[in-house]
Image (cartoon, rainbow, N blue to C red; front, side, top):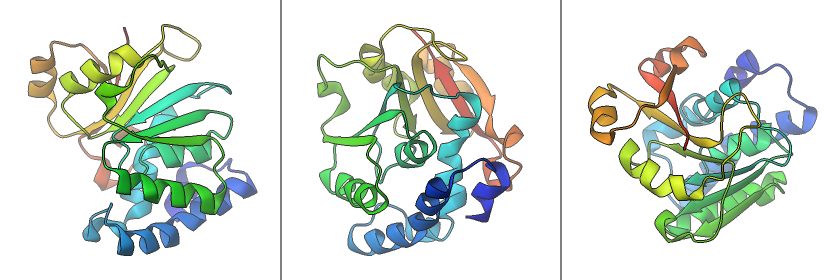
Length: 207
C-alpha cells in the first residue's frame, strides 16, 4: 500500500480504504479461486495494482467515460482504475467465469458501483461501443486490436483519441512488426522508478 501512496498522494479517504482492502480480499479469494500466481500475491500492490494504475498517469479519464477491460482476469487493470476514477464506468469481461466471481466479490466488498462484469469472449460482444478498451498482457497486439477495434467509438475528448490502451512488457519490436500497427509507446519505468517496471510499457492505438 505504501507504493500506491508514494506515487498517488491525492487519494480520498474512500479510495485509501478501498486500495488498502485489496490485499486481504485478494488473499482470501486466491485461496478459493487461484487468479493470481502464488509468487505474485505478496507483491499485489507492485505487480498488479500499481502496474494497472500506470494507465492513470498518462490519461485522466473524464467523468462519464465508458471503458471496457478485455481479459480482465481477477480485475486488472479494471479494479484499480475503477477505484481511481469513481465517475468512470468500467465493464470487465473475461471468458472464464470463476475469475469474474472474484471481481464481483471484490466489487461488493469495497463498494465499487462503477464496475459491471460479463462472462463472454470479447469477439462475441456485439452492438456495444466504448471510449477506450484497456487490457493487460492478454494477447498479442495484433489480436487485441482485432478484438478491440470494433468496440471503440470514435472520439477525442482526452489527452489522446479514443482507442486501445494496453500494458505490455519485454522486447516488443517483433510483436509490433508482426501486427503491422504503429502504436504510441510510453515507458512505465520513466513513471514509476521501480525495478519491476524495467521494459514495461503502455501502448496506445486509435482508429
